[in-house]
Length: 73
Image (cartoon, one colour):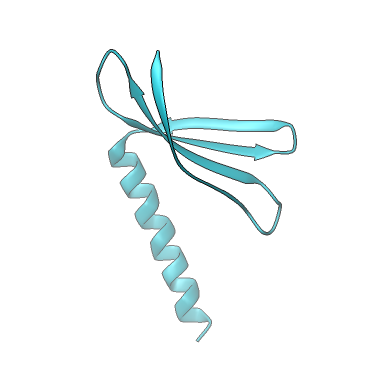
């Protein structure tokens, strides 16, 4: 059994996908995981990542977004 804590939910403006981020804590203990749920119409993509992977992914996304800001100036 796992305890779920919702961190945030939003819609992507282009494509209208719903993205939901949750923290998953297993009752038995162990590492907390970050669950990403992407809903496209009736289809769901769900995956859990560890903190190291989440940090790496977040940094790559932030670097990309920052580069887009630089290009638009």
